[in-house]
Structures are given as structure tokens and as C-alpha cells.
Length: 132
Image (tube, rainbow, N blue to C red; front, top):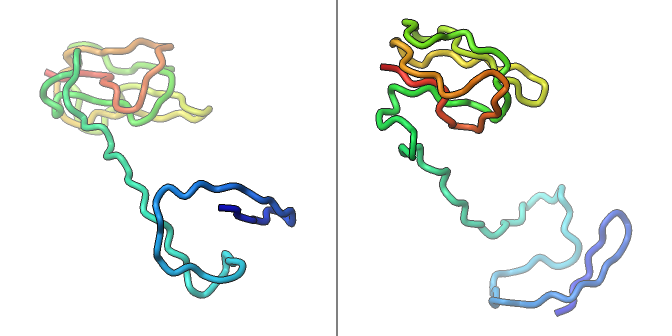
């Protein structure tokens, strides 16, 4: 099937292979992004986000873990192993895209272990600190 589209005033002709016949009504003529009746786009299945299940080296109890909210680099660690923390106490600071993100304690508890060091790169949801 041949298809003509216009982008920035230029016309392009494309060869399109129809994999599955679609018998839904189609609008006639050019489609304006400002039209009064919106065109429904076909739904695209979206994979659910990966579960925060315990993996190798992750704590089994999520309540005893502090995970990274962003991907970035550890620029400062304020907490120490054995330190008693209250909710919202500063644990460490991460840098992501030239912005600093403060990581605070999600729970009250004693720091069991710190899984990263200054200068380490971290990923979103990576365990940073475990609590007893």
C-alpha cells in the first residue's frame, strides 16, 4: 500500500505493508493536530515496571532497605554503619545530570551496611543502605 505524508511542507511517499486489516472508520483528508474531534490512537501494550523483588544481594525485607531514587553518582555519604537514624535523616547525596539529590532515611533504624562508596555509580532502585 502506498501512503503519502507531509512533514514540514515536504511530501513523502511510503510503501507500507499491511500486517493486519483494520476495518475501523478512517477520517478523510488531512488530519489537523488542532481538530475538534481527537483521533484515537491504537493502544500499545506497556510492560509493567519490574517488581522490587529481592534479588541476589538485596535484602528480603524491603522495609529494611533504602533504595536509590535516581541513577547517578554518589558524591557524599553522611551516614555510618551502626548509626541510629530517624525518618528523613540525611544518608547520602547523589548527583544526577548536574543536580544533587538528597537520599534520606525512609525508616527509623540502625544502619546495618552501606552498599555503595563515594564515587560509585548507582542505578534507580539499587539498594544503597540496609537497616537492622
